[in-house]
Length: 225
Image (cartoon, rainbow, N blue to C red; front, side, top):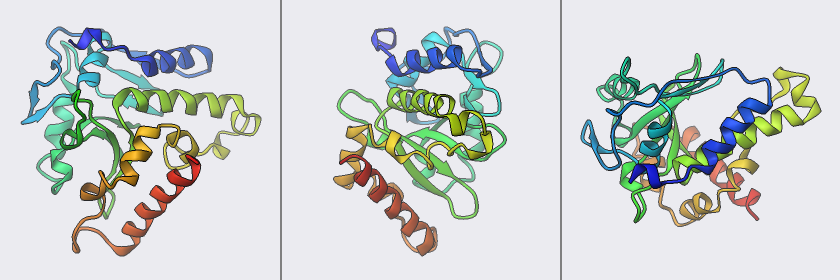
């Protein structure tokens, strides 16, 4: 099943890494990587993530995005989830971490509880600093990879960003217009599908965090019009 899923977003990302001065390293796929629907620490493995690992055993962009390794030498995706599961409160503990940003604590994760009829899980960025929260950023893994490819195109094709790395917007927070191209994600936000993992009871989140999350939703809705 996992080999039948086309990952056009991954294709676009790999093409962007070849086109622009991006130092990307990948690992060989591993037959022991989780299959679609297999349980990883009790959570069903996303079919698109399984398709990714059927092609690559991990991906790392120097000082940038990384997708956890999962090959014969290192089951990094299992390790990444074992590291956070004991410390993250619910609902974050039920997410499935698959990547992050180099030198930062931000993590990218799928949300098994919000899978669609095909089992495809949306993607969030988890910010564990001080007041942990989840920022919805893609309706599925391939849309996440596609958004990152478009981000690379933006920062390398725009003169002001290409010539001055310090001026580049951050991903995903600085590019809501790219994230909002995922119309299914915006629809899920409008329908309140993410409310249960975004807006948590008192004691877990501050009012400031709740306001930030509302602003994020408003930015995506405005950018999608």
